[in-house]
Length: 198
Image (cartoon, rainbow, N blue to C red; front, side, top):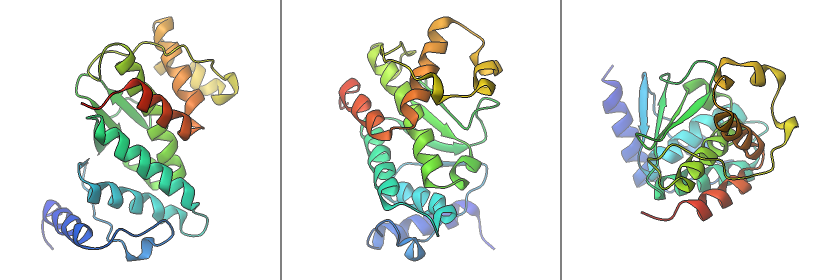
């Protein structure tokens, strides 16, 4: 039937040539297939990612969520952050920030949960990007931003996860990210103020 990469390139070309659909107009968007790993590099790729996430939101999608997700994706790209859809993510995590590679990796199933889940995962990881910028740059291990954390933002399961076993500063990094994840506008402000344009 053709190679998956060829289909993605064709879909990206079709998206680039077509007008960008607004939130709620996903029926006109070509959603490219992906295999084990897919890089999100262009505006067309970002739109295709939102369309893929929007498939779960057909009946209950909030146009503001799609708009904020697009804004956050564009902001991350403008700051030099690479985005990849991949299962190469720490166990128990839906996404992760790798400062050495300046890369956010999202599990495919995170995208399939819908635009709100995608937005919250991106907001969480955007906080980690801001923490890296605060430490001196996008390629640095993050340091806490000094945010007041909300204990209600995460569950007991998250607190007892193996992901939390580590230094107290690592725990603070996660607490900040979980606190901000539910308020993507805050993540956008943190990223804008902490990470300057390259």
